[in-house]
Length: 116
Length: 112
Image (cartoon, rainbow over all chains, first blue to last red; front, side):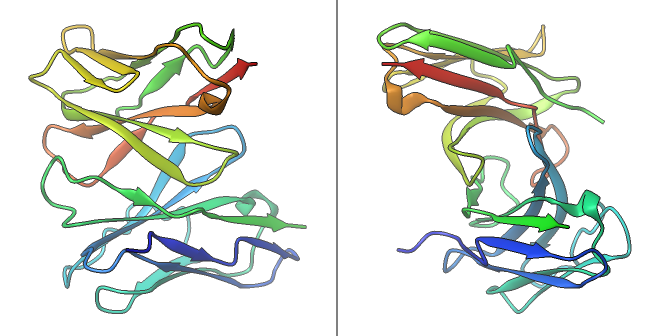
């Protein structure tokens, strides 16, 4: 079946504007993750959704960041009042259950966000 | 918090040579996984090694794990130009399941 998809693939915005990034996980995957990757860096965990459990938001860097997920499908990551330091690639991943220790995460192609 | 760190940060080799990259981490793990990333985009899962395993093979990939040294290595044999990418290790903690801790990556360039 189709892999994880993300949209848009690229987003250029002006400082202070709000942006919404979308992720469509693999069908049947109950767990969904958002990561941020700054240029030349590793991945920073942002948020995790698993089924109907309360999401783990411990990685969100500030209250300007929020994310929602509708059931076990689409998720949106919203960044309000964007700042230049928000410029990065935002990666979404999904996995089958997010619980078993050997559960594998499958990544989307990412959204490259540039804040001018 | 634990963090994987890969070394070298960058590696350039000729096609046909072997490429070795290393990952070190700080706390106890359940497993360690290696991912490849092309052109700064999505990551592709390569291989998972559990904490009670010492070595694992998949095609041209060989992964070793030394829990006493808290380190892992990824060997790519007979490298090809298509192997050019960034390689990341990700650790899954002994107590947690979903929180992968990613290293900073090794940028591999294979010259044709």
